[in-house]
Amino acid sequence: MYIDSHQHFWNYDPKRDAWITDQMSAIRRDFGPRDLEGLLQKNKIDGCVAVQSDQSEDETRFLLSLADQHDFIKGVVGWVDLFADNLGERLSHFSSFDKFKGIRHIVQDEPLGFMDTPEFQNGIRVLGGFDKTYDILIKPPQLMEAITLVNTFPNQKFVLDHIAKPRISKGLDSKWASEIKELAQHPNLYCKVSGMVTETDEFKWTKGDFTEFLQLITDAFGTDRIMFGSDWPVCLLAASYNEVHSIITDFYSASEVDKVMGENAVRFYNL
Image 1 (spheres, rainbow, N blue to C red):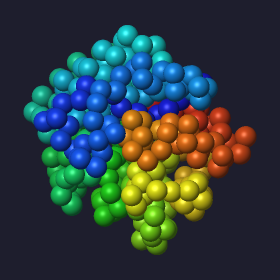
Image 2 (image 1 turned 90 degrees about the vertical axis):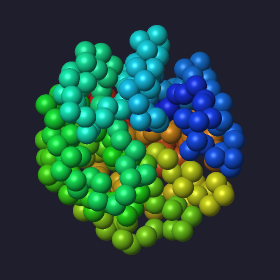
Image 3 (image 1 turned 60 degrees about the vertical axis):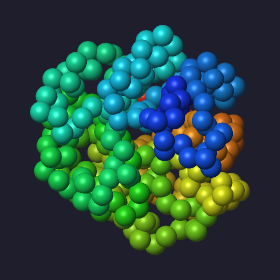
């Protein structure tokens, strides 16, 4: 089974979705399952994991509702307030939905040190009692915090989104590379090869721009802990779905593609 491990749905709201700037007008509209299903079929992908883009339980319920209506949505990574006094109660509630697989917080927008706080780590500790995953969304300056986090919770399943969002157009950064290698030493962490096309200057790229990044990620994690994610519809700012898909399928060998394009996501998210 081939899986797109990272995509989004939303009914566009100018106030809530203020992160979609004037320069991102191409995605200032609704994106729903009917927009994606044909793209998955065209690229021979059997299903997807819908990931939160708004930090609200309303969106988590919205995504779970879509997943209930569309079988090809195999899992949902939602949002639950990790700082809430009733976190256990909220996780228990959402865990009653079979397709609720994990949670994510948009840490990339938080100040440095956010993941080091006792409050955040207590939230991860509570999450650990529910056998749910956690998606790490960060930028390169936060990599050291991620290393501490995955080391502190060796039994928690983590996945790094978008290879920590390095600036692709600037080439391989030695500090990012070193910290990625250190992070990858923790077997409880997977990595999504996703979100790369939008980390380019003016959204301009060639496939060769990604080669050294994909090679480093593959050398660090091995092909058993890497999973494809389109980051659709955000990817549309820089590339079509087909182009994002082909960046990954052209890089990996026939013997590796089944793992990266599906088997690893099925195992990680328990699809």
